[in-house]
Image (cartoon, rainbow, N blue to C red; front, side, top):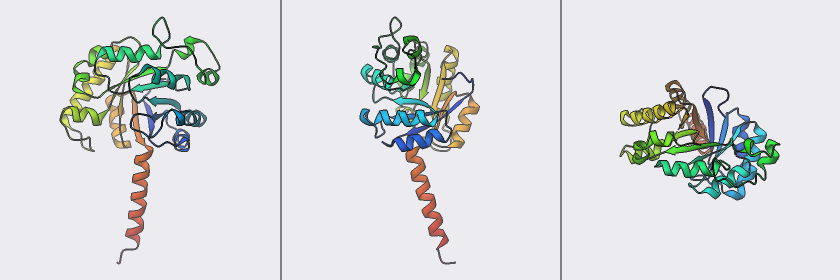
Length: 248
């Protein structure tokens, strides 16, 4: 996934819409993540969304609803190139996620790449076992354990969830201006990933923040979500229309 050696920019799909996913992929993002935790997609809508991302030329990621092996395995069998697993607080939880991504002897993933075998055109477990295991750091417990989590075999990346991590640290939700306490926490996660020889990702909601995170050294950066773009776009166009017709 990180073969290019550069930071990857991604888009987030919260809508249950394969068309939204296709538009995101065709816009040139390195990856598109289908959010099954807080987004509207479920397993009945995941397949067409993954097909749309694949057709659009981006890497297909899925944020699973929770750290359940069957959810991880099902997402990968449907063709996801990696999973983002939420709420990983301790090394044991990271190991559970990694085991669901890897085939034996390195893991416990059951072999059955139903669509993945078609898309990758190779039934070899070695090929399918390369899927990315990305674990989310979202709590004080995770922050305290981040060095150990980063060293869990099979974990490819740490991914910061800024909203939940901020709430756990008793901070306001992230805004445009950096919070010093949060920035210190983010730097801790980045350092743990780099020292362990894995990658660090972070969720952003606008291009300016994404550029700042890239400059800090993050390898995987979500730029924006479909819902955010729709809300901003509708509000902006309405505001422009209303301003145009205000009495002079």
